[in-house]
Image: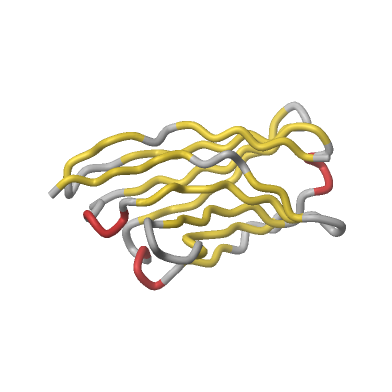
Length: 117
């Protein structure tokens, strides 16, 4: 079992920055990929960015050059960060942390990001 706890969401003006954090506990040593997804009202959940154990990254086209995902491991815990810059109103959504192991996917509770114009 993996537990994910997100933090860092909030309200920001367009052009501003936010950093999201997601701390994984439990069997976090078994995590292969960690990432961030988002879901705006009336839309499907979509991948924002992901990072593998080896450091490989993948970004949605809409956030390339503006968002940076990174991953840290300390004291047997994995933490993934999403640094978001040059935020746009269309980035407004609930952001969910995701962790992928061999046997299951795990999700955080979500954190709201609202970008005002």
